[in-house]
Image (cartoon, rainbow, N blue to C red):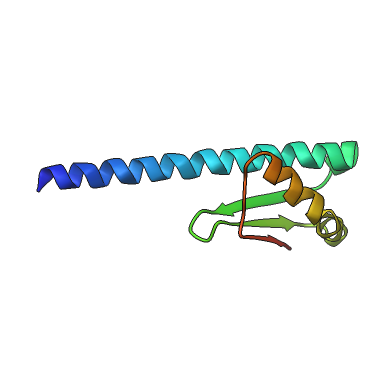
Length: 95
């Protein structure tokens, strides 16, 4: 009984560490993409990037509606950029 609990905890730790790694990769990748696309124009804006490992989806929340629209326009470039970094997402939502 204790061996199976130990295996369960090890699996859970492995899954959590993998999701943290992917979350970190996504955040770093998107920050790099945004700096390349918008240069210094992005500095004054606030973005909240949330990755949901359960649905393999990404939620980007922008406080500014114009920035959200610009991100929507650049969405194909963003998905291509993430694919080059071996990050495949099922859904990307921009608010």
